[in-house]
Image (cartoon, rainbow, N blue to C red; front, side):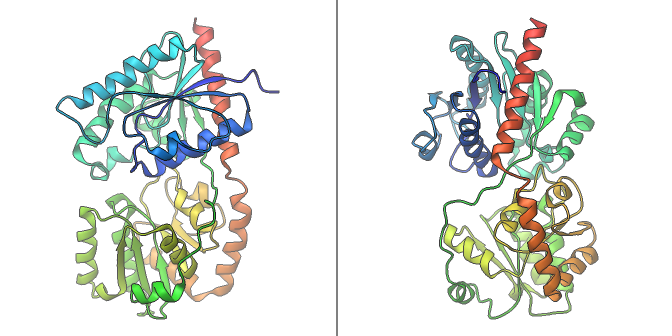
Length: 390
């Protein structure tokens, strides 16, 4: 039986309309925490940029939102100091006044000193340490200043995969017994009708060609360059590669590479697309590929599996943990390996069907309710450790 419902503070200052996967993590975890332990009291510390759908969300229970007068995406000179001061100074003070049991930073930052409350921090990944171009220079510098001390001073640390935990131990020198692994979950949004295939094929000039889809940020660690090279080497010269997502400076390099390899007419960069367009692309895709060198978890794999698209992905970092036996694995540093995996799936309908069947069983292992239960267990460990020290 669980202990009494907890009084939990969530540091959501980072949440803004462009929070991406970290924003999805917060929304899903909040709902799941309230569902698996009704009576849980949540206080959410947010910035002035918090999205309306968070404040006005149809949550299972009320949430005490505390707006801090700070911003995270912009601000005057010295704004970083003000924002960090609110998270490292104001949040623990307000948590003590509200008699919270624990404060959890969901995106790398938690109070360094909180004498009257346990602290937990989720370190989503350390990709920015090896691939600093993943974030802009200001954001990377901020991560370097805030993430290591938050992880070292927190009562407990949450990693979202075993690979991420191993990285925290090896890179930051954290004791493995301080780290809890809480894999992320998967849930399809309220059904969005996919845009018709014929309309999408016409819009993006796909003809009737086989389509390889990769939904990933256009950043170097995603290894989209390796995927472009792999598609260029395929025997079937009709195959189209579709890379949706907001443009980044790296996209120009990918376009130049496609032109250099002579396949500029076979690679599409749709940019920002609607949910209906995205669902339509999943529906028409023959294969989904995630060729990343490193991922904290690899949620796009589950997103594709949930839409019955056969998956091929890297055999490194956290991706094999997520994919299990339900994906075609390859060496992301070998163009030949990527191409062989893609070619096998495109040419073998039975293999595609087999992976889709396995994916259905795999998805059962990843629910947000499981994430919430594991997170609550981490909170209670942190609370017990703080009390033991006191």
